[in-house]
Length: 509
Image 1: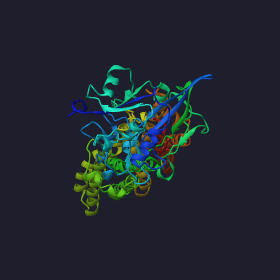
Image 2: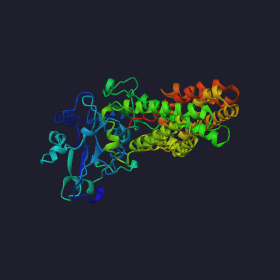
Image 3: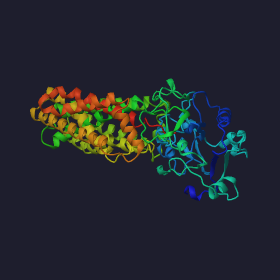
Image 4: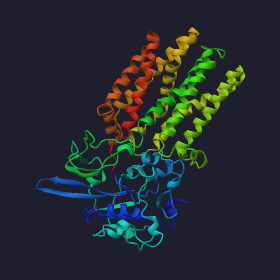
C-alpha cells in the first residue's frame, strides 16, 4: 500500500498570514510532550524583510513535515522512525539506537536527540491526542487559528479545502519527500534557509541545541551566502547542528584501512608480485585488516547514543537502511578475514585462497557502502556525488598501500615493496584528481556549493588543504618510500574529517 492508498492522511496547514510569532505553539508542544530545555519539536522562525522604513517581520512555524516519502524512515536501521497507517511519521523510542541516521537524512532539520533519554524524536502531530479525538496541542493554543490539522483525504476538512483551493507551498519540494506540511502565505525568505542573511557574531536570538549532548554541534552563522537576499535578515532561528561528529570521520578512515589492508596484498598476489607463502600475505595483511576492522566496529558502536542496543541492527533490521546493509557487509568481511586468518594459522594456502574469493568483493563493498549510506542523507547535497563510491575504493587502496608498506619494507620481498610504492603513488594521484574535480566542477545546488566552500575556504579548510597537500606529496612514494606512509595516512584522515563535517555544515531550516 502506498501513501496515496491510505483511507486517511493527517496533514497540517500553517497560515503564515495569520501567524503573529507568539511562540504559543512552541510552549504548548514542550508542555504536552515533555520536551526538555535546549531542544524543540517546533519553533517559530522569524526574518526581517525589506529595507528601512519599509520593513516587516515574516514568521514561519518550523517542524516535522510528515513526508509521504520520509527519508528518516528509510535511513532508520531499526524502524524506530516509521509511518503509521494514517500517514503520520511517528517514532518508537524503545528501539531507537541513537545512530542519528534519521537526523542526517531529514532535509528539514526536524529531528533531534532528546538529551534526557538519548533517543530521537520530533513532532508527530500529537498522535496520542488525535487518537482520542483531540486536536494537537499547538492547534488548541494558537490565538489566531494559524495552524490547521486534518485529513487530506476528506474533501470536507478545512485542510483539504485550503490545499485544493488556495495557493500553498511546501519546503524543499526538490527533495521529492512529498511533505505533509503546507504553508499558506509564507515568504520565500523563511522557507529557504539560504534566502536570508545571517547576522555575524551571533547578533540575534538563538535557541541552543548543543553542548555535551550534541558533540557534532556546528556554531551558528554560516559564512558567505552569495544567494542571500539583501532585503532579508534572519532575526530568530535555532542553531544548526551536525549529527555525525569526529567519530564518523575517523570511522571512514579506519574502515578504509581495514578494507585496503588485505585488498592491496591480494592485488599484489594477483599481479604476481607477492606469493601466498610470504609473511606479508600470511600474517601482516590479515593482522592489519582485522585490527582496523575491530577499531571500526568500536567507533560505530561508540557513536550510538544507545550502544547497548547495537544488536537491534541485526535482530530488528530494516533492510532499506544502508546502516543495516553496511553492518552486514562489515560482518561478512570480518567473517571472511577470520577464515583467512585461520588458514594462515593452519598453514593452508587453499583455505586462504578460498577465503580470498570472498575477501575481494567484501573488502570493496566495505570500502564503498558508506557512499550509499551518505546518499540516504538527502539533505546533505555535497554527499550526493555519483563518484563517491569509486572515490572510497581509491581511498581504501591508498590507505591499504600506506598501511602495508612498512611491513613490506620489513618482510619483503623487493618486488612487493616496489609494487606497493607504485600502488600507493597511483592511488594518491587518483585521490588528488578526484578531489580536484569535486572542488572545481560547478555544483548542481547552492547547498552543495556552500558545503564545498565551507570545506575549502571555511572552518574545515585547515584540515582540507594540509590533507590534500600531504597526499599529493605521497605521490612520490616510489622515491621517498616509508616517508610517504604518514603523509598518505594523515592526509587522508584530514580529508575525511573535512569532507564529512563540511557536508553537514549548511543550515537546513
